Image 1 (cartoon, rainbow, N blue to C red):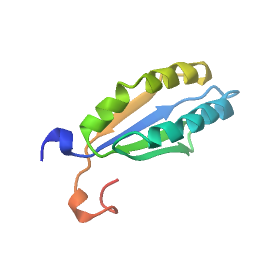
Image 2: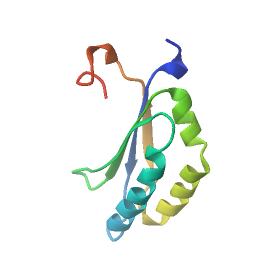
Image 3: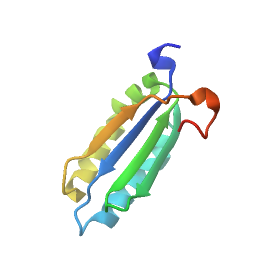
Length: 108
């Protein structure tokens, strides 16, 4: 299977300012319906982590789908929208699932 045909998973960590966590969550929440309509979006979910960060977990059907999402004007707008609510730069990691052939419990 080519790299572009494999699923892509992204974990993005946002560090909100202590006084702006709710605003960050609302900005991300408002963006969810648009992303869920994008071709290849399998998962785009926001989580409140124990270390006071907000974590976004994404899964895309292919790397090509993720690349289209990454180049979208809407994502650039979201980056500008959330910037005032952050106390540190956003961190993200892109991953390729291993053992997906074992089913959903073995690979996100």
